[in-house]
Length: 473
Image 1 (tube, rainbow, N blue to C red):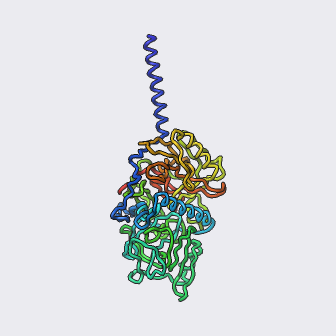
Image 2 (cartoon, rainbow, N blue to C red):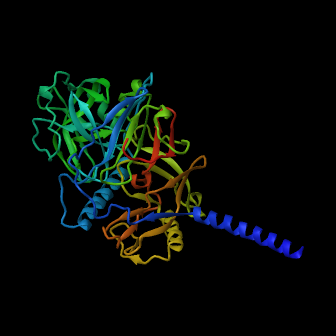
């Protein structure tokens, strides 16, 4: 009898240990370094996204990472330093611009549209690109939630960078019309967005000039044109016809503004899509696609978890940015309470690469991650990335699961934890960085948004997250 009781107790204890061990396993994620495409970054024959379709009334655009068709670097380190320098400049620009800008809403009868979205790795940027039609011409643009004005390079171009698509010629388009000087649209540009607009020398066209703070800029004239979003036709779309353009736009034709203000594509298509859009960013730079969906029908998403919504913080109506309240971060089973830190208000931005956190928040995250990842050797820092490891020789590693927690208890499982500086994995860095000052606004970058369906409901003032594998669609 005693032997039977002892055996039963031993089985129970074994079951407890198994369950406890399983719980601990759930706090780690195993990644295979063999499956990473380090050293296999190849130029495909087709650098730009092509697929687009309509499904259940939605426009779906293929999203690609935008990086190496046009620019080359002598070493991988040079390439990554170039990307991070540009990212730093963007963050500085955002912190400057967060004090200005503007937005309006209109009435709607929503339909849906899906647009393929891909990585921009093949056009030499860590941002994401989509292809649409402007005046019947294919153009490839960077999808940017931190910008409002959609613009492309135009003929006659006084100063243009190299792009893959032919430069748009408004003179050859039957649907193009210039925005006239002193018209309500021209006047509203500066009021709505802070973009400088002015009348040209001929006092007829409405000129614009827009700087992105990293030395990049576009200037030209505003125009009305027909755009085709995977079969959804929008007439009279206001865009920038860039005649002098310079900067880190790679081989893209220009930029698609997905911000909150009057001129953004989201505001201008309110009647068609109801102010709702979402994206799923592909996890790898090469030969990988996600999707940009215009419209709010969740049945076309491929999410594996329900969409959980958190409140958008409605900052100044002049701001193009989307603000959220970050209430906590967890590393493995250890929760870091963001309320203990100075500021949990953050911007979520598709155009920023590396997430930036307030110094106190980042310091706590870094210390806990190092404690749980202590069995792996350290490597030197790389620019702003100060937590790096040498994973050479490891076939796979176990990393602590990282989650961001937003207002309302919305937990987001972060897949994009590591930034691979060297192809042999000898310098792999935590893909987050510290801001300089506690009172600066944190930014959730696109590295922490991969393999997620991120849903922007601008009229409902909420933003949703769901897990989704972002591959070929």
